[in-house]
Image 1 (cartoon, rainbow, N blue to C red):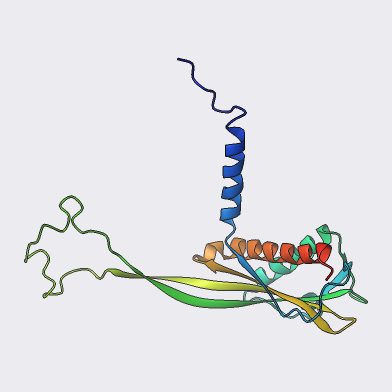
Image 2 (tube, rainbow, N blue to C red):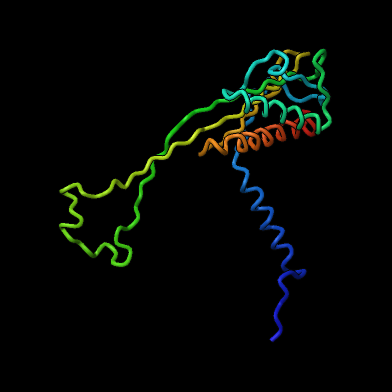
Length: 198
C-alpha cells in the first residue's frame, strides 16, 4: 500500500484556506463606520493628527497613547499619505473609550463525571443545607473602543468616524490588542480613501 505525501497538489488549497481562516479569526476587532456627513469625493493625500499638534491624549495611559500615535502616523505614511501640519487635506483625531465590565458565566459542569447525576448522597450534596459551590463565576474585562474622527477641513465636515471595538481580558495584552484594533480601523479608512469616491 502506497502512502499519500503530506503535501501534494490536492491538499495545498485546503491548507491555504485553513491558514487564511486562522489569520482572520485572530483579529477580533469589529469596525463601525458612522457620522458620514459628506462622501469621499477625491483621494486625500495629506493629513495632520490633532492629538500630536495640540498635545491632546487619546488614551488614559500616556505610554499607550504615544504608541498609538506613532503607529497611526506610521501606517498612514506607509500608505502614501504625507504629514502636513500647515495645510492638510484631512484632520484626524484619535481617542478611546475604555470601559471596565464584568461577565458572569454559569458553570454547569457535572460534579460527578463518572456517575452522572444518578448518585445522590444527602450528606455529600444537600441543596437544603447550602453546602454546594456557586455555579456562577465572574470575570472582569475591558471593552475598548479605538475611535478615529476624520474631517475634511476645506468643507469643515466629517468624512467619517471609525470605531474599532474589542475586548481586553488582561492588562498585559492591552497594548497588543489596542494596536491591532487601531491597525484594522486605519486600514478601513484607507480602503475608503483609495476606493470609494461617491
